[in-house]
Image (cartoon, rainbow, N blue to C red):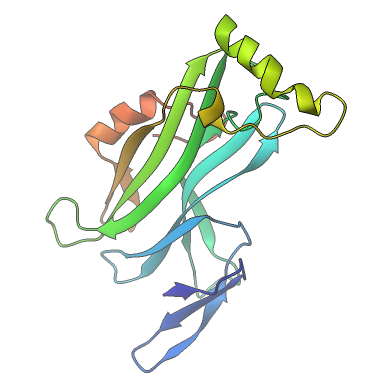
Length: 198
């Protein structure tokens, strides 16, 4: 399985004789994607992306797309959805800033059962909105007071980001379940409350 570059929505697969179009992808603009083969022999596309969603912040999500012969478009199942507002502190309020970015997704057998699982890494920087941070943002955000909102890199005002690994173990139905450590890690991350999260 492969995806054509530049956010095209055509998915290709190889049946052993060559590559050919297998279906259409929803144009979701992912930053990372890997193909993962399930126990049923079907490839699924596991992708991560971040995008603007509302006035409370950005969404950063990991999801699975699967092409079906019965439908023109693939089904999409979220694995995890996070709220991240750290890139736009000048326009987003709240008592805490979180910055999340996906750094890698790898498809590999994590538990030795011969089935492809998913290991995803993200960086997470977080801080309560303290007086020192407010003072720093007052300076950083000043250029945008009389113009369009500016993007402020989280590294300019948040503590160093930490690497977090999320492991998703393939199940017999072609889905994925978080490992026990991943369930612990997810509780430390700012999940998007109206989306299904483990």
